[in-house]
Structures are given as C-alpha cells and as structure tokens.
Length: 362
Image (cartoon, rainbow, N blue to C red; front, top):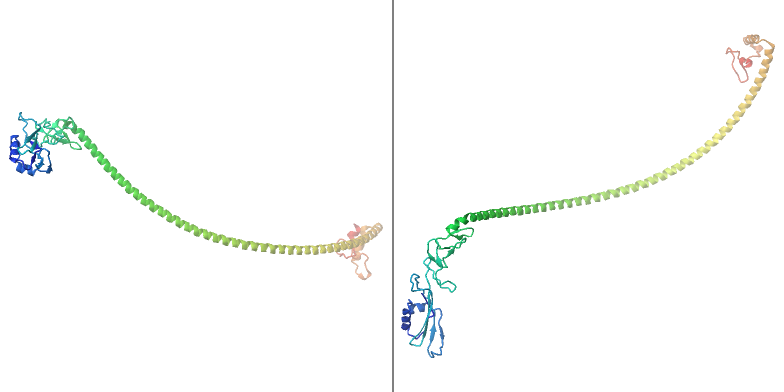
C-alpha cells in the first residue's frame, strides 16, 4: 500500500491524523515516517485558514498487496479529511501487488497496476521487471525458466530453443567464419600494407639508385663530352695544321712542277735544237754519203765497162788464172794491175778504192 499527499499543519493535531491513517489501514508513523521522508517543506497562506501556518509534504509507504484476497483490488484511492484545527488532510492510497518472483512493486505511472502474467513453464506470476518473452513465439517466461541462446543471448522457451539452435549455431558459425575471414582479411591487408610499404621502400631505393646511376651517367657523359670536345678541338687544330701543311706542300709541289715544267721546256728546247742540229748534220752526212756513193758508182761503172772490155777480149777462166798468177808474182816491185781485187779465195782485202774480182765479174 502506498500513501501519498499527506498535507497537515504544523500546529495540527498529529494524533488525530494518525488515527485517520490507522482507520485507513496505513501503517504510518507520523513522528518517524513523515519527518524522515520529507523531501521539501513549503509554507503558504490559505484564505480560509487565515493566521494558520500550513505546510505540506508527501510520503510514499509501500505495503504488500495480496492478490489472493478478493475483497481487495489494485488501484488508486484518494481520501480527504478536515482536522479539528482546520487543517486539511488529503490521503492517496495506491494498492499494488508485490511480484513474488523478484519482489518488485510497480509504482511508476507507465507501469500496469497488476502483475503482467504467469510463466508458462512454472506458473510463477511475473512483473514488467522480471518478465521475459520468447524471441520466437512470445511466450511469457520468468527469469528462472529463461534460456538464452544466440549471438546476443536472446530469450527462448525450451520448445523454441531447439528449433532455433541449429539456425543460431549456423549464424554463430557464419559469424565465426566472417570473423575469421575479417581477421584473415586484416592479416592479408596488413601483409599487403607491409609488402606495399616494403615495395614502396624498395621502389624508393630503386629510384634513388636509378637517380644516382643517372647522375653518375650524366657526370660521365659530361666528362666524355668534354673529352670529345677536347679531342674534336685537337682534331680540328690538327686538321687545320694538316690542311695548312697540305696547302704548303701543294704550293711547293706546284712550284716544283712549274720549275720542272720550265726545265722540261728548256730541255725540250735544247733537245729540239740538238735534234735539229743532229738532223742537219745527218742530212749533211747523208748528202756526203750520197756524193761518195755516187762517186763509187761512177767508179764502179767505169770498172764494169773495163771488165766488159776484158771479158770480151779473153776467156774468163784464163783471165782468172793469169790474175791469180799475177797475185802470186814474186816480184812485187813490178806491180800488179789487179792488186786489191777479191779473187774469191779470201786472199785480197778491200780498201776504200779497190774492188773484188767477184764484184767485177758479177
């Protein structure tokens, strides 16, 4: 039982109020319960109670309500009393059952005034505080008969628990697999991140190595270009020098050629002069030879004529013998008119003006 809204004057007769409460069956001691339960004390003036100090306080008193007693029923009952001193007492009695399962009394405004039902398993009456409903079929269960199962420990009755156990176990298995998959995925992602980081570091090292290599190669190319430029300059200078030397050599050769041509021209002129002189000399010699030959021919003609004259006078053989004998004449001082003639035996010699015998008789 709950008593609320006890409003009394400080100067009122507490004994009279206590009697009223006792008549109502409220187990209230004004000296202890009201004072100990005072939450606030408000003073106010009442036009009907002028000159009287009035204070009000509220106190809640819980008394067990037995639902087995048919004469009592849960609900709210309000009584008002006027005391001899003029004070007004308002008593509100709330009858509520006490839950036999957990001892809870529903006093809140949004709670039902009676118990909510009985457990389908053991028949125990339950209140909103200890009441559970099967998540599958909605059956009312007390806390002692509740069987939790599932990923969030839902409430099931024994009948529905077996029905959903396989599904819940399957869901749990799926959850475990999903969890393992997520863990494996996390590990793979971590490994990928590590590999990616390692790959990134490796790529950074490769990039740095390539950059260093490119820098070294660029430096080497710069040195090579400088060396090539130096060699090209030296080659250009050497070629210029060679061209200058070649020009000098060509000029010198041209001078030598001109000198040789001049000498050749002079030599040719001298040769032509000598050749002309030689030809003139040869022409003169030939002319002299022709003149000499003509004289010889004239002499020969004379001798031929002489021989013809002799041939006609004597026998040729006899003349030969006589001539041979004349050549063997031991008296050379007498002379030989046929001396110097070649008689065919090789005994005579030719001189500038003599002729052989064979020549004569040919």
